[in-house]
Image (cartoon, rainbow, N blue to C red; front, top):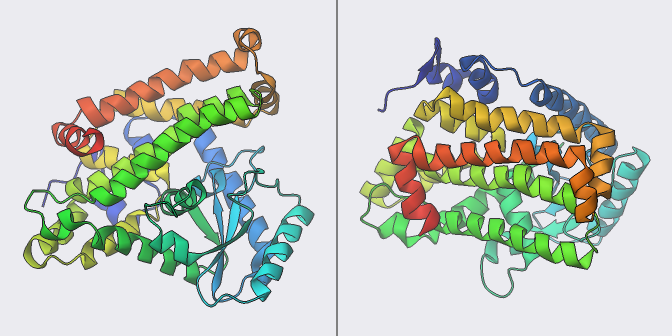
Length: 371
């Protein structure tokens, strides 16, 4: 087993056993202060409870209400909206349409901000397309988005049986169809099918950003750009981290051994399913702790993200970003200057983390993340 990292007496074993918060332990390990992350977790807890109070009575055993975005990442601010789907894993019945409408009305009555008008969220979604339409013409952008985000940044509200089943089957599908895992001879075995879909999603987000810029006449350009630089990039980085931890995490060694000896993906499925319970920031913090990443790199990433959440939680700054559409407005916007000031160290910190500070992670990134 690989040696467990230690930061000023805080060991990874403590985290692996108790798991209260990897981010909290990472913060203590580098003597940092991330008040916006702490405030966001508090707001998230309140938001999730409020959602549960609103909709629990409308969710049936074969369905789960699933939320995405900041509420799933535990990054809620006072301005956060609620992106949701009614996930159906069972026989399709007419009553599901009524459930969809009841949930939407309950959330409006509870004064939760509605999802955007794209049609990706705020509706019922069956499990079949999520599990079986991975790639090909039937895998529309909306399906890819829901599937990848269901893995990387989602949270069930109330009944989670359908949610747990669907996520487990999606993971199993990625692993079973990956012949490099079950029949390859390379070491370590990396779930490349999953990695490629995560990468495809990230590139789709960046392309769609430009499309929306033109389609919406630059409306909310600055706010969307800020999220692309920070929270969207975090989701992608967390996807890389989840995949590469299959090779770097001591907890994954049994799964790697099973792949070599019996070509079974059962233990890797169980391992991946557990890791997917962690938020993007939590999995990134776990990666940093596992690899004993230096304090400067950690501060670059997490200090910047803490400031990002502070900006989003400031209503005047968020409005300013939402209204800035022209280059002239951007040049005058102090909030936009703040976004630029934090997005560069955040990006550089991620580059250091994945490509410069740990030889094993850098090799995985080059061999699998790029080519």
